[in-house]
Image (tube, rainbow, N blue to C red):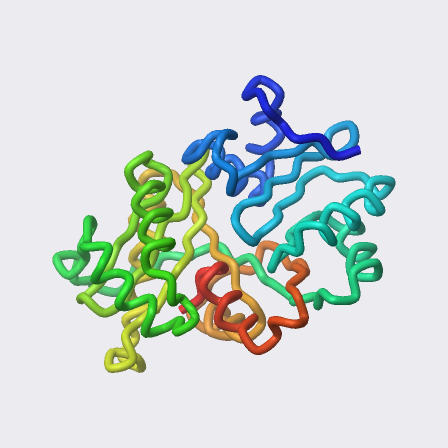
Length: 263
């Protein structure tokens, strides 16, 4: 059974804070609560929790017995992306042939202790308009500036997310920092600055900057960017599959890269 959560006390935030996917869901709760129509939480069976945010569904702790109910729910809402635990994801892939499974790797960021870094070139509070220009150059499908700005500025104002840029050409966003677990995403570099190592240098510095506060930072990478993060020395801590609508196959690479925070 899937039921909408209408009271804050009915959302098991303790359960959400136990996993990376759950922390991501909790970050949306911290930013928006449960009253916005585009950010809705549901219970799934006994202990499962589902978040529907815009065109993405995140699910934690769902039981296999709930797969049929989940498939019905997802057919009704047709999200672009579905992220959930195995083996529920495997069964949903069978029940929802309109979705494709994409392999994703979770990397832990590693600092480079031996290199010098121009910290004065880091902008800790950049103009979001300038940040968008960098992101849009890297991800042309990010066309709705007003939607991106509304969400990003809201999350930043509520202390959930933090945008940083380096040399006015590379950007990265701390998507959330929950219990010293940090998710880094929306990494991009302007075309004219690519090949100069800015993303590599910036991310290695960011890893060290966060580590001094005893924070563990990770990012997600689809296979198209997985080799880049291996090459710069980040550590693989997990792999999984996410579901994306096959009808959007032409757009899935750029949408996926933006959501998962690839350079």
